Length: 239
Picture 1: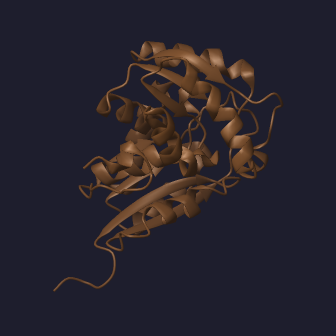
Picture 2: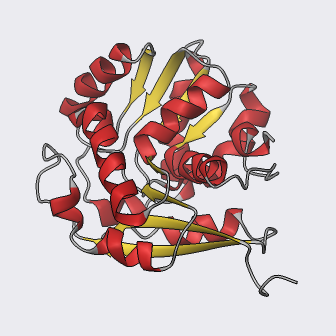
């Protein structure tokens, strides 16, 4: 017999200002006790223009490696505008540090769009509006057409994004479903849009790709632990 407790171990690198990663991942995995999740935190650079690399992460990756995780993810979406080439380089460094296959939230979202499949998307982004053209361009370089974007009227900090009410998130997401997109993509792992995904999908028949949910979905596949997780929308319900 094997050891008691989880048989698969996932490692997640979480920005220190993120209050959604652990709680939402735990909620999604509530009925899956065979999956264990281990976290390391790090502090984001002050500017959203700064790419994330191993120098920013410090010893957080190697600490996850000590737990001998089966797959690891950077739980952040900055590569969506700073460039996914940087995310690929980060994944190579994470694999070197942990010995495990690696992903990022941004790469997980693209993998999810390929799996659905969805080539025309509406983007919901809780960050500054001037970053949206960078996201549109990066998605275009990866074969994804952004047909609509929804952003808040005021610039918020990451903690403020994490405290948005269900009504606030609904108001930000709802316009994205009126533009004939193949999927609605919510970029920002501290935006708690994953809790609304299944309801919006039932109402509009359009899949929602929440970046935090996509991160878990991709991690499970990298760890050879994939299986349907009902109640969280079409992506996680896929086997």
